[in-house]
Length: 414
Image 1 (cartoon, rainbow, N blue to C red):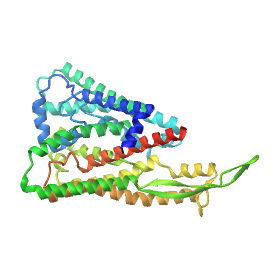
Image 2: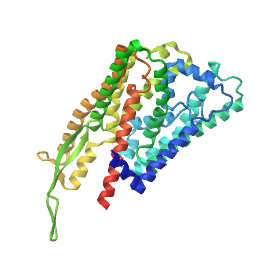
Image 3: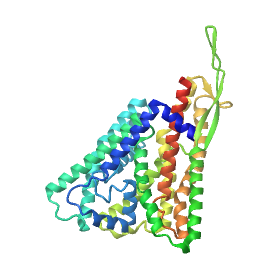
Image 4: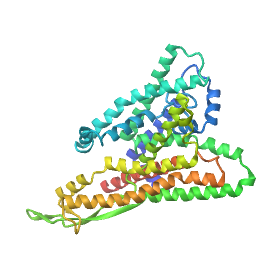
């Protein structure tokens, strides 16, 4: 551990990237504390504290929502736009071809579509949120000019936050969007610990201990899911060019138990928030109370995580391309013919892994709900709940892998 930290500090390029990420986190936290004008923050914070749905929504913005800051929507509009365009790849062949078959240039163009759609979603969501808060009496006396100014400020804040995420991915280390969501969740950890200490009840000591033990087991399960691999053996045929012989080596194709990482969790929670948000904004009690039952919420959460694991993997991982690339490089899976048989073999292995990985991921996601129902301990529900825990652990593991890769590359170059 200490050796790795020392290596990071000695590596100028890696040190620069990590400091850049931390600087962007500081900018994000600064923006999260800049409110739009004409807001009674105290009343809004009290309202959010009493509303479980908005409390969860506030968690993913790092407390920016209950401050009604210029980044109150977080990366929600960008995630929504990305979800919609990725789902459209399964319906629109041209969009699928752009994303899957046109390489890095095609994906950049695809991502550009999501970026262009983000301000539209941000403007609509900011208007809806301001109208809802006004309806609750939390925003009073806002003029038309003030409304337009607030929408422009919130939309600009969302676009700047999206830009910061892109900068982190490009110039920092790790996935910028995931890291900003991670930063938003972790930002509330100290206040949650403080609240848990103040509300500690000695009569619930056994429940607290049980909750902590199960949480540790959940962390271990998340690590197991994210680190699980199935290595498919791959051999390369010998080729002679001039006086040199190439190939003739054996390696393996690693297939992850959870190739989609944390994305299914983000997608699932985004969709789960939608009915409650619509019901709350439009005062439709049925939609507002639809997910108030833990069993209904947990069941839908499990199903959505399970399905999104398959959907996102289908969008991002194409067995046909893997099979084609293996064949072009002279590689083959022992006992499996190149071409279509190799594609079918990889697809079969992938589906088997996804059934295990998606089921396990969904089970881990709803485990805190079960534990909370059994132990009755709710103080840590936001801090180490299934969604937060999965995102935190997954982002840490992914970032750690990228740091290790950077260190190994440096050692190889040296």
